[in-house]
Length: 305
View 1 (cartoon, rainbow, N blue to C red):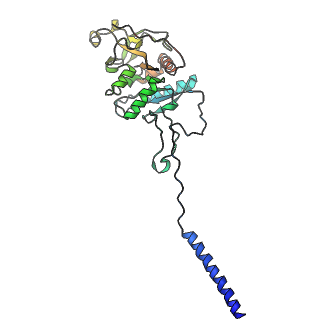
View 2: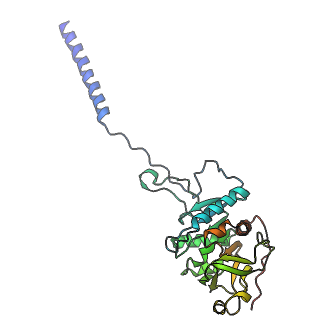
View 3: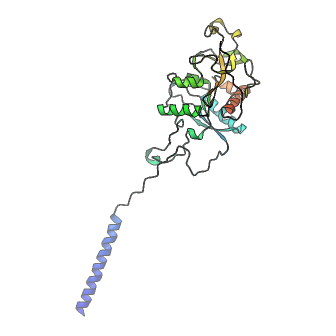
């Protein structure tokens, strides 16, 4: 009996040691790492989430001035463009001070928290037009430049605001798309204008005298390559001003096509005050609607000299 009890006790003790060793091993073992998050494969916002702007045209407003002149009016311009979209109901504006979204590539996060994850970032595939307020040589990569040109050429819109003609001087294809680069400008003062096309959306009531900074243009601008909507009145320019373009061709606002896309260019808005003017707001809203394809308008090219 003593031998049997001794054997039973030894077996129970051994089993207890084994169980205790297993528990200690489980407590001291390293946990298995979690699988990495899936890498987003599209550039559109977090797929699976509802789009809060279904049925709305989407306008990407970019004011990337990291390499160019910082106009004081940019903040107010962006706020005005956003407000006009919400109040009119014609579009939703997405405001950016960088050029990240000007791409057709997927946009995913970086850093410890967001690396490889969708960050709800849109790309060009999600927009119907761009309103560009940038200046200088910009921050676009060569791939982004190609995506931007294709975006417009394939049928989307591009609105070039006041400083957009002083952007990308070393990118000839951009100049061809918008129609020309600024060569210089006249000082802010009341200036006589000729409204060539009052039938263009938003231009019907634009005044014939307006105070703003108005530019004059250089190549690739050429008369006959754009449809002028508003121009300076050469009959009221000084001899020094007229000498900049002896032919008297000083466009202020124009429209043109680029492939299947629509391009609207306006030099209005150097200071805050023009953005508060109802005539300027009406003209920009009309240009945005036209660029978005919400309204149509004939845009025959200007007669050549």
